[in-house]
Amino acid sequence: MDPLLILAIGIACVLGLILVLRVNAFLALITSAIVVSVLAPGDWGIKMSRVAEAFGSSAGSIAIVIALAAIIGECMMASGAADRIVQAFLSLLGQKRASWALMGSGFVLAVPVFFDTVFYLLVPLARSLYRKTGKNYLLYILAIAAGGAITHTLVPPTPGPLIMASTLGIDVGVMILVGGLVALPAAVAGLATARFFDSRMNIPFREAGLGDAAPAGPPVNAAGDEVALPPLWLSLLPVVLPVLLISTNTALSTMANNERLAQLKLEHVQDWDALRSRLTATDDPVGQRIAATLAAKGIDVSTLGENWDNETQQQVLAGLNKILVSKTPLLYDHAAFDSVVEKRWKIDADIAADADATDADLAGLKRQQLLDTLLQASLMNLQPHELERTNRTLLEVALPGVIERHEWSSPLRKAADISGFFGNANFALLLSTVAAMYLLYRQKSVTLAELSQTVEASLMSGGTIILITAAGGAFGAMLKVAKIGDSIRDAFAGSGGSGMVFLLLGYGIAALMKVAQGSSTTAMIVVSGMLAAMITNPEALGYHPVYLATAIGAGSL
Image 1: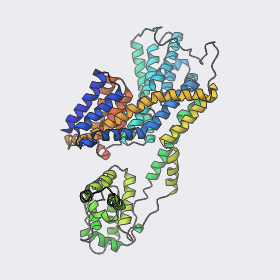
Image 2 (image 1 turned 90 degrees about the vertical axis):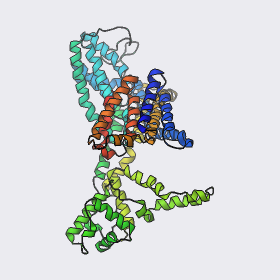
Image 3 (image 1 turned 180 degrees about the vertical axis):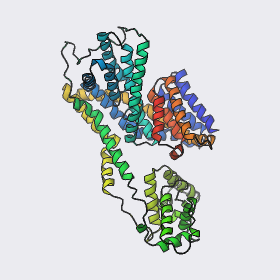
Image 4 (image 1 turned 30 degrees about the vertical axis):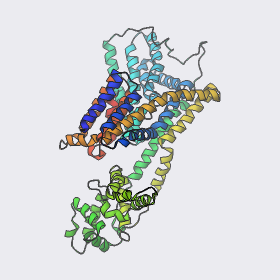
């Protein structure tokens, strides 16, 4: 079946189940994933199992962080930390700038806390401010929405942006930084728009609906006594700690990756005559492959003569450094490098040692396809610095005594490796969760049993998000199995603007999904999975995938 037709059926299935039949989003997405898997190529024996495997893979990548984020948000609400942050904004800006305070509070709180919770936390405060001033009610409500909704769709560890980062292969720290940079001016623009509508629309204040308005000052209990709130620094700790750890890891990793230690220098070539002989030999598969890859970069070693002077060596060296990061063509080729790839030996040994393997199984072993799948496909997905290091190692192993073996552990790389542990999103959010739980325990003097009940309640809401997210990941994976990406690429071949097309597709489909079914998170899950299946080579976009994620997030507002 045509992949584009499968895509249309899959989208229709999702929208039809959610909008027409009012089916739960998890059931709608997992059912649609099964439908797409059935229509996609493959043996019937794997059509169901691959959906389950994709579901498990998606859950494994995001379940921990979503569960921890849910606990953080619940503990911040219960401990009064969220109220403390709101009061800090009001104290800093004053009631004359209450709209800025509400926008800022929503902006910060929607990072660890679900947006609907933030909205219901702040609306009573907006109602109280209106009762005092008698004006700007619409401004206050829209200010909350402007601040909270934008970080809810753009800044991790909120589930939606976190899922997009995982699906599109974006570093979480990069998503936080770029998402925050995009979200801030967008929130300010949203506040300006709120002022415009507030000056032209008179929205009546209704007493019924959300209950009594909260006082604009510090919160009080039923007896009218002021409730003690935690210190501001401790209230902000669950928000700031993971952002700081993840951003530090991103910064150190970026600097370490930019060291370019894999780049070849003249002194790294130990024997230039041996290198020339290997590259020009007609009976050397490795040398021929390297020479062919150099030729694709404009360097024909057969025309360089017998004696390579310094200028020629520099030319060859520049070509080798180009092919270290090249994906078109890849340096690795199974026919040339079979003898130096230890992974192949292990694969052959495992199959040969399998007691249940028949002669037909052994005879049917397709080494070329197996190596292509395990090596070439994974190489295409490597980041430039990873590919560069992999290819440098490949040259060192394939050309012993010619290319010097290099030491990778620079001081900056060691620091990045350490930060990679503490800055891992799972660990950073675990520390933040501990801080949030301690805050609740300290502030409210709850028992361990009561603290456990709070955690369990938060995990109930987080579990729903995990199920929907994993089902959306399975749906996107099945679209990839159906080769949707190849069809989309072929459809826009030669257009020269396919990168912009994906931005428009991401924004437009996300906006349609949001309007159609109302959930920003579901829209981000479905659309990011769908586009990830369409993008066979991220480099072909012409820009960093984080911008595609921000387009999807903006459409999901």
